[in-house]
Amino acid sequence: MEFFNVTVTEEAVQETIKTLRSTWLSEGAKVKQFEQKLSELGLSNPVALNSGTSALVLALSLAGVGYSDDVIIPSQTFCATGLACLQVGAEPVFADIDPLTGNIDPKSFEASITHFTRAVIPVHWGGYPCDLDEIHAIALQNGLVVIEDAAHALGSAYKGNPIGSISQFTCFSFQAIKHLTTGDGGCLCCKDENESHIAKSLRWFGIDREGSRPSILGERDFDIERVGYKAHMNDVAASIGIGNLIGFKERLARRKHIGEMYQYRLSHTPGVIVLKKRSDRESAYWLFTMLVEKREDFIKAMQSREIPVSVVHQGIHKYTVFKHWGIPELPGQRIFDTEHICLPCHEGLTDEQVDTVVEAVQAGW
Image (cartoon, rainbow, N blue to C red; front, top):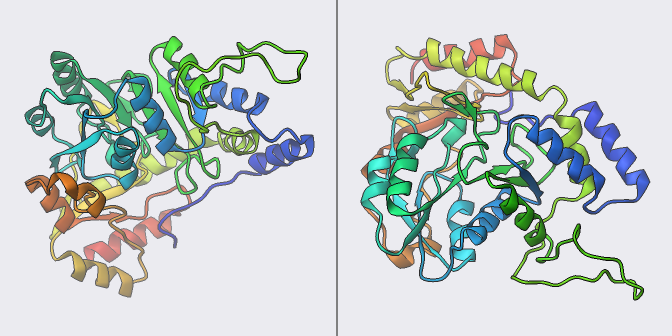
């Protein structure tokens, strides 16, 4: 039994072979095709990139975030969320989380706002959507940009709307162990179509490739108006993504089924607190997280029963790179860092393996 599962479909293999044989390996028709297929999932104007981190950096840049600006983020995330802020010259400010979801606490977000604050990056921990209505209301009242970190959340929905169609910017990751992979990659979704056009320019050094004109000199005629990045997705990665989108909805449904089984069967287990699940949102179940008493004893018991478990990530506010601004008091994060643990939750698990995991947890520690 594996903790994570990497799905590469036969269609992805064949798509990639065709692209390699075409010798067109950089950004081209396959990237456009992948973006179109992502939009068919309900994502707003997706711009394919080389990583989810690039999506965060690009979103911050488009939002005008830079030096002397603050960006409010939760500590319960991967370091990329905070490092993206530093890469544009901004300072990450850590808000607390709700330990029963792992997501940013809107009240703590609101209390963290100062006149330096320009944006907030709510992270959908494990694929479970944040309290977006509350976050948007606070952001609107204070003139802040909302940039969703949806690295875990492709296929999630909030009040009937797909994550990736709600905020001004939403960032996805297609890194190797995500539930849709392009080997490595990501995308930025923009509510405003014009911002997606600018993003496509910025992902390639700030050059408007579609709007540039051929020149007799051999280099296209273009201008660069602002600092761009080398953040584009290439056609090889896009081909993997196109092939892996075949069957994605079925694999996502399987993940959701497994997550729901865990939720139901473990909800009354001594020593376990399953996280909150509200009926107005759907998790993509990239992770199934719960809180447990005596976590190290729990881990040792699971290891003895050959059940892989992991915290995946703990609070990032303690990393030296972020300590320049001090270590904040985050009581919800402290609970999560002490008690949270994740069980295997992916489409590669059989019903028998799910039973084995449940029985191993119910056997105690």
